[in-house]
Length: 107
Image 1 (tube, one colour):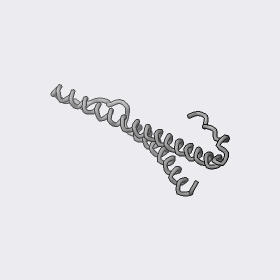
Image 2 (cartoon, helix red, strand yellow):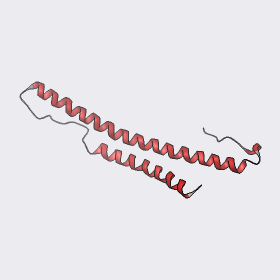
Image 3 (cartoon, one colour):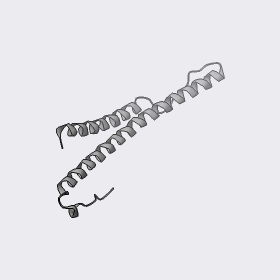
Image 4 (cartoon, one colour):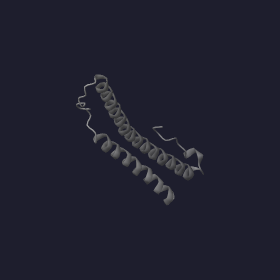
């Protein structure tokens, strides 16, 4: 395997870690509870403020979770590329004797 491919593999793995770490950090910067809504005399305005704050909270939580999920996906991509490269290397070493070619377990 060439050095350039190793760099790409490592970059994918590093990106996975960054996405997961930053997703956790991002998720933690806002309290889970909206808290007390500022008191206003108009009840419909108070309700609207509550709904907007809840929507912002939901979007924030979704983004943090999405970042973490993308980190998991990048890790899966890294592992699958690595396994595929290993399969190709095994195949190239075994090509002279087709009887020695065996499928990988766990796919």
